[in-house]
Length: 556
Image: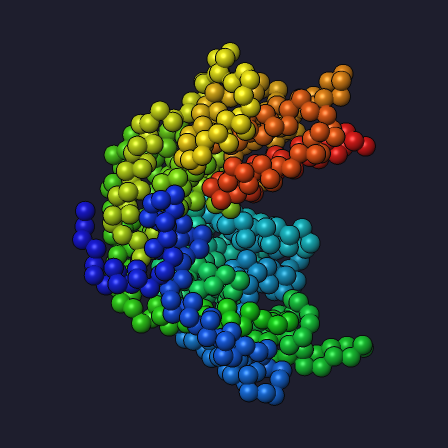
């Protein structure tokens, strides 16, 4: 195992959450591509703002407002300097990358007309796809997509062929959140400009790892989020060239973005306020600037090198694991690894790792077109930050190795023996009798293994439950005595186990009996909310809601 630099060990002490215990084990946080943890400097900054300077900005004449306004606008200057923008007027505060892209699509995009073309890449996050689809639907513009090479890099030859005098916008990610690919955006921006196109770069995944010079890149728009950059959630930045921003109409109306309002007409404020309607996230902006100042006070070369070493060590540790398969092998990558494990659904991998205190992300990573291209339902993603250690990488790899060879593997060929399900004891009673959560978890996984696999006629698009990271199906039949029988299945083992519990609770009940069941109370008794979170991520909540909806429909 490589030796951890002493500077990194000291830096870890500045992130209090890293001392947290999960299921009795030290937290290993490898979900940094989703959001990063926050150093004390940022946490203290937010506390200081709210205890010493809390006020609205720009509008009042008292001391607190003057202090808040100074901190807020100085934060804008710090951000502008950090990305080397020409002016702080080119920095627009938003809620994050998603809102930044929507701002451009709705404001700059209002000038598009039928036949204009927008170029995206197969790597894009949904936030850099859906706003352009909505714009295309409104204007008649066309979307063209850059394909990928087998290793996960964009096909630059295909990109060159897509560019034409009809290309108005090239909107591409700087770094893929799903497989880590770093795009050669300087070259791609120059090519777009050669045909007169405007460029927007989604920098959400790049800025936490790379130092960006927007003058050098010559991007027209560049968007990023604070919460992936060691700053709070709910704050982000849209950089735009001043001439473009000045020519664009406002997107949202309200206070601050106006200079004069009458019932006949309104005139708008100057940049950047023209695009900042309403009370902004003042503390978030100030704390984002503090995060950037804190980063600049560190040895950035050391941080980037350590992240690279973690990434390479993880690849080395995992490459010999039976059934492990890295997804994508781009020439340049940020420090994240997307992978699959033979015979295990990505959601099962995520839950099994969570039981060992290891936080990763599983699913389609809001990149469903990419997953469709790869012919995968999703992947498991481990993403690294400079505060991670080589020991954490080893624990992660060891957990994956145990998983790959353990008896917990699930095969689609598994069928339940006739006496597999308990005949007299309900699954709920079984689980409640187990006081230790780990024992309950193992029992849920067992039920996921022995649950009867639904017949193929159940697994249809009509029965597919929306909002699940795994494929989950629910169907029902109404008997002559007005009792409802439910049938369910999932391709994730943990969800199959949870479905076995839910079906056992609701099955063969009348409408009134179903409506009387307090499922939240049951989940609380089992500590599901704390340990497995029956939410959008695993789809259990969507299944329960569907069951209640079926009962309501039958009641009417």
